[in-house]
Structures are given as structure tokens and as C-alpha cells.
Image (tube, rainbow, N blue to C red; front, top):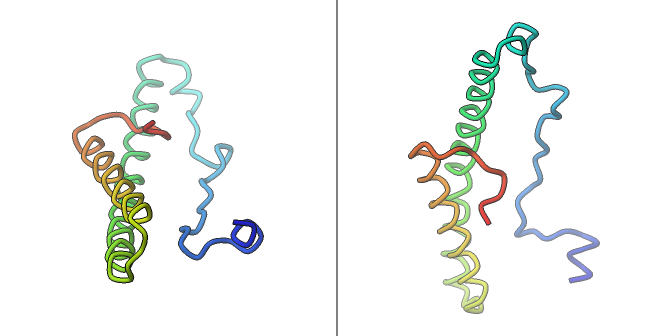
Length: 109
């Protein structure tokens, strides 16, 4: 554990920092002046977040499935295999929920 803390873990995906809010497109004065227009602005942001999540999930799911296959083939401990299966299951469930119109969330737990 200390080795991973100091040098990282090859199994961990790279950290991609989100665009700081100050650089994200903000609401215009026109949108801020009217509750209806501001709600439309919020909905656009939610749609954008949903699309970004879905695109990221489409890229990550094959990687997780390949890792799971390698873990099974190499005789990894059942706990490691169960953890990978759980991550895949939760990612697929979140992907399905977003496709069905649920609002985007940062945490599902």
C-alpha cells in the first residue's frame, strides 16, 4: 500500500481534471435575468454533463471488461474479481439510467 501511495498504482485510470467552473461557459446576463431562460441554461448543462459521462463510460467499459478478463485468466483473488464486476455493473447501471433521462449526478451512492 505504501508503494502505491508513493509511486501510484498501474491499475488506476489517469486522473482527468474537469474544466474549472471559471472556464466553463457561464450563464449570460440575459439568462440570469429570467428564471425560465436560466432553467434552460441549467438543463443544457445537465445534458452536456450526461453526454460527457456517457462518452466516458463508453471508453471505460471495454477497459474494465478487459481488466476483468485478465484478472480471471491470471487467477486473481475472488475479491479482486468481485470488485471489478461490481464496478462494471455500477457503471453500466448508471449509463442505463442516464440514457433513460435521469439527471446526472457526481455520486451514485
